[in-house]
Each structure stands twice: as structure tokens, then as C-alpha cells.
Image (cartoon, rainbow, N blue to C red; front, side, top):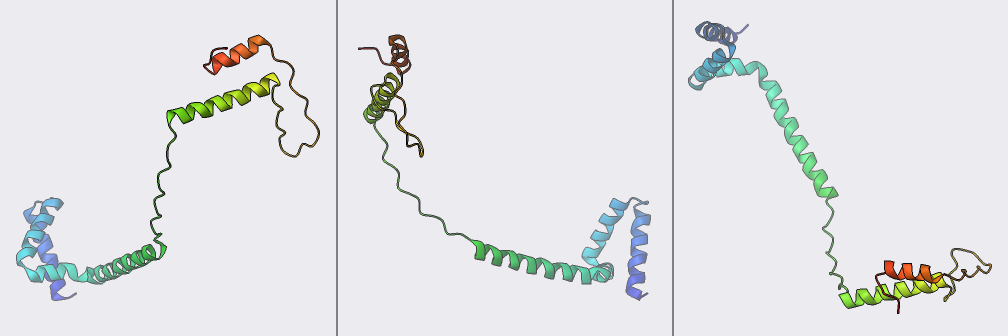
Length: 146
């Protein structure tokens, strides 16, 4: 063992003795002593310098690889689409009226029902709807019967 290591062991024993076995207090003493004693700092740190240097290198390499990956996978910010012109309340009412009218025509048999999918044969027209049903549909649609 080198004389530096012997010196470090002696100072660690002194710190523990002064702190009466209290490890956190002994640690604080050693750190305070290392502020003024470069030989103690070097003697305590020397066995760990290879690991510290390896960690610093690996950390730097990892950071560079992460930055390179981020630069390669960065996606450009897409253009923000222009806002769609919103319909006015009158246009909404017109659309609702047209929908309601088409619904009523389909229910009452006034309009021919549309075929769905690949159906090629004629669909049966709906049966005549009673006045009570028409009135209920109008009430649900928020309209009064004229």
C-alpha cells in the first residue's frame, strides 16, 4: 500500500475518532479537511478516479448519441390549417329543417327510401304512418304541426 493510502486511512480513523463513531459527522469532517488538504483529497479520490473518468466519458457519449438521434428523428412542425368558416345559426336551422323534412318523408312514405349497399331488388315502401306518430316526430323535432 502506498504512503498516500496509509495517510488517507489514518485521517479516516482520526475523523471517526473525533466524531465518536458518528459516520455522517466523520464524513463532514473529512470533507472539511479535504478543502485544505490536497494530499488527503487525492489519497481518498485516487482509487476511484478511473471509474469517475469512465463515467464522465460514457455520460458524454450518451448525451451526444441522444442529441444525434433527436436531430435525425425530429419531425417538422406541420402547417396549421386555416380555420374553417363556421356556419351561421340560420344555416344550421336550414340544415336541420332539410334533415327533418327528409326524415318525415321517409317515415310517412312520401319519399322513396334509399337503398343501402349492393341491394339491387326493389325495397318495399314503408307503410302509412299514423297521425299520432307524425305528431310525436314533429314534437321531438321541436316543430308544431301546421
